[in-house]
Image (cartoon, rainbow, N blue to C red; front, side, top):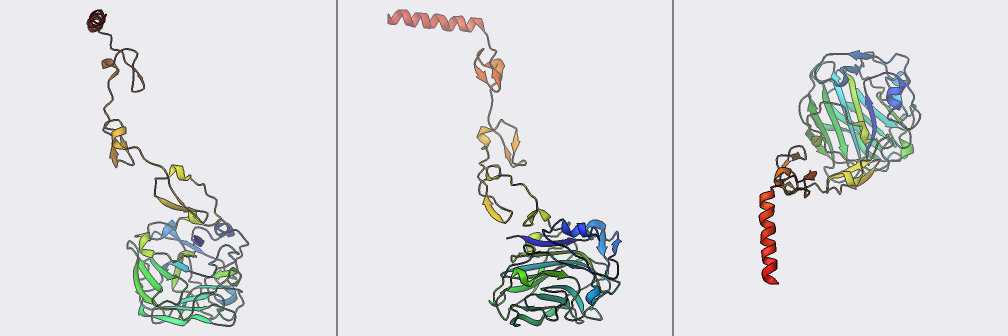
Length: 340
């Protein structure tokens, strides 16, 4: 289980998307995709995808096919948007955040999701679990409104474990410099029944509402097939780490090189480290280990005080006091004579 999709506003070319995706990528816009450079604090990469052109429908800002292994597969889902509001307060028109469905010409969200911000500033989601139109969320809007400030980057999270259990869907928000806080929990009308084939497209316009997205510039979009805990990401200062992609080139350090009991996931496989770190008693005095958490206490004899030829540290002793050696030899000879 892993991060399935990630758009970062570092480039408006196909290669920016294809780096994270296994399959075909397409862009569809009669208006050029525009990246704007900004010095605004909290904008990752110093650029954002400019939404001010107001393109919609078949001329959507961004429409890309993530392929079969880059969408949730029928259970949980987490979506993260990092947006830069164009204006403070509530938008004048409904603002599309994201559409995921089976065709860019679809007229209903069956088999996918529509996310938007309403004119009351509330988070809105519609999701159909089957082609027959069984709704998990039927044009659902949160009770609480989000708070937008012009030019202030903001994370918006949608988290759902895929069940119809009470309170198992939620919306979280975080202004720049803050850890995400839960805005509201709510309940799906039906459990998820999504398939990879049912979500072949991700786009930042909403075909079903013909909704514009002119109020939010886009800095990042990420989609997981797990119910993430947004608070665990802390006060974000950089992009979601793409090394967690399924299908992304990565190198396993090996469980033998990871601290014993520490869990990690690579290429969708959960593993646990087996490396046992050396204890302080077996580390040279004054030498630190484990990023300074452990300082050695082992006292190693100086070679000058170790009998010549006897091993110590990474060498041998050099002590050659002939007087003491002669005295010891005399004692040994005396004891031998007495015994005999």
